[in-house]
Image (cartoon, rainbow, N blue to C red; front, side, top):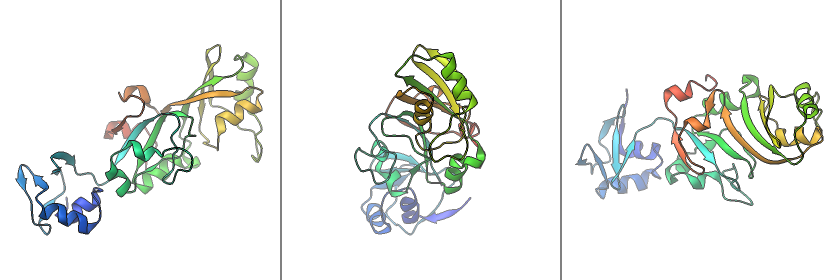
Length: 238
């Protein structure tokens, strides 16, 4: 448990600069348990704290851990260049508290994207040494064949890679559909592996990370949710 001044709490939760947070409090825009708080120096216990700011409730979180069901044509960058950034799909407070994607999905790839402001968590989920499996649904330009699956399981050589890369799992899901499980997380890996095996990836969707399944989260494309401790336990330990 810890106590912090109210202006520090608001700043930590992404409501803006310390000066702006103080003005919010002095203007009567912040309340706790129905009581308006107008003294920014007031110290408050953060454990279990629920703030009301601009008539909207916010649960205090030391760090945020979220999953986004990423649509196509969004970039996983804080400084996007050609398409909107994924942060535009989240509340503005997350930008202020420097939430960032855990790894990246290509702008045209859809599916599960983890995001957080917790550095050790981001490192644990993205480090290749952790061997976190990621599940993809790939649509191929040419029909899936047993030979294609055999190649992807045996390993294909990619440019600038010292050794062949292989899928942990590769199963046919339709005439032009593959489910591929990888743990390396190389740049454009699924697309490059399919190209190296003589096919082409025309669409790509990430359906799971670790044993956390996107379809169990109940979020539509473009939506996000906080991850519960139980859901976080399905990912790589920090």
